[in-house]
Length: 71
Image 1 (cartoon, rainbow, N blue to C red):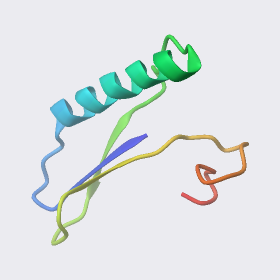
Image 2: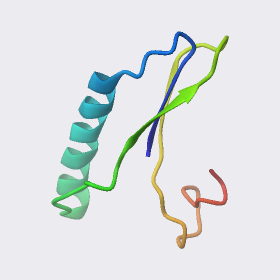
Image 3: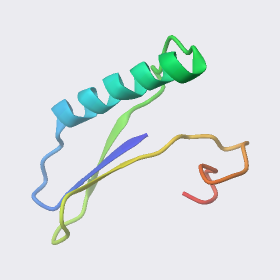
C-alpha cells in the first residue's frame, strides 16, 4: 500500500500515481515484474500532524523489515 497522511485532508491522487509509476519502473528493472496492480493508495486522516507519505509492501508471509507484523 501507499499511505498518504495529510493534516489538511487532501488525498493527493497525483502523488499516488507518480509513486505507483516509480514502483513499477523499479519492479521491472530489479525484479522483472510486469504488474503492480495490487498496490493501492490509502488516505489516512491525521488532523493536526504534518503531511507525510509512507510506501510499504504487503508481504504477510515474508519475515524481515517489510513483514506485515512489523508494519
